[in-house]
Picture 1: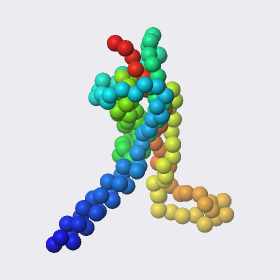
Picture 2 (picture 1 turned 45 degrees about the vertical axis):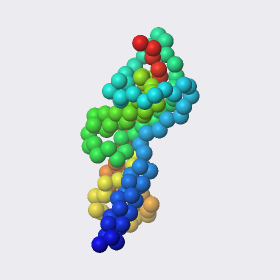
Picture 3 (picture 1 turned 60 degrees about the horizontal axis):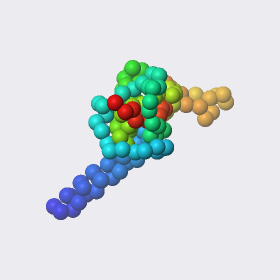
Picture 4 (picture 1 turned 30 degrees about the vertical axis):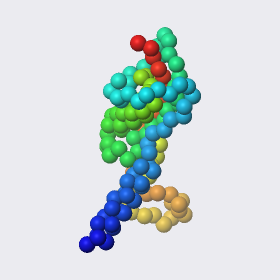
Length: 140
């Protein structure tokens, strides 16, 4: 009976480790980090506010978000960017770059053996939205 409990704990621990290794957001501190705030308090700016301090460079992706529409993927990447900014105490984000990254293919179940298709994937490409920006602190 104890073996089953230990096995279950080991599987859960391994699954947690694998999932946490697949982080879809990151930051590089370039200014003063502050105490974490709620992600809902982070404001996204399309133009820089009059006075602000840069806190960090941010990157995020919709990878592993299980969103299937373009809008859903954009929303997931933005949510992750806001969570990353909030975790370092930034209350604003300046979006600098939007993009896409390929994360694999959805197989169509067919393979081609002709010389032109060697080492090429067959199927529909799976794309993720990516965002890069600057986490900022805006004095209110």
